[in-house]
Length: 237
Image 1 (cartoon, rainbow, N blue to C red):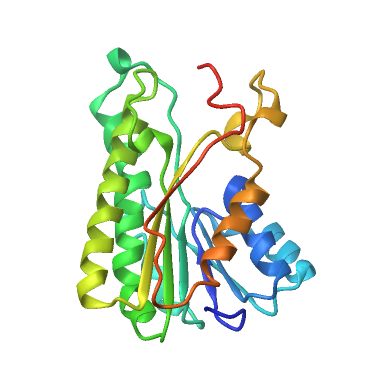
Image 2: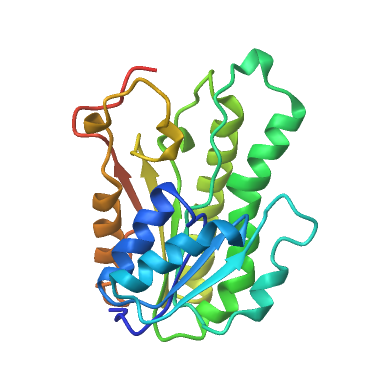
């Protein structure tokens, strides 16, 4: 069990799912590290987390499209034992119209960004008696969508990395659990402006409860993979 005195690092925490995850972990007393592509966007979330009950909140700029995206992580005061790789970007674009740059952009954020952060923090996570890495993958990690091909490719890559990471940790650091979550359509800022019934989407609060549940497992147990879907199934595209 990882108790609430341990710090959780949440990437992509300035809005949407990441923001809701930060609220939930704060409510049960975890210290929080929030990352986003602009630190200015995190000020509101930091205030919300402190008001929700987190004893300490650090904010860090991590811009996966920058020249040195992890430079600010060198200044972290806290040493996280939980890493939630949530940062991502969704591109809705037909395969026929998708450019090389679209693929590079999606891969840089959705796959390579997570790989970089995880590699950077892995020594820190490994120094704890118990640690947890959660990769927010997608249903698009195992299904190809012609109208979001670059996104699908990047999420397939993230899922592959997560499986490879789990295989590595079994041998090198079995006390560090790795869970890949294949997440279906979830209420987030990605749906802003779209004519979609929000009641048909996964509530991100439920996702947060699942992840908090993972922290309560002992070192003898790992949930390697979870699929979470809307109760009425996938919405028509």
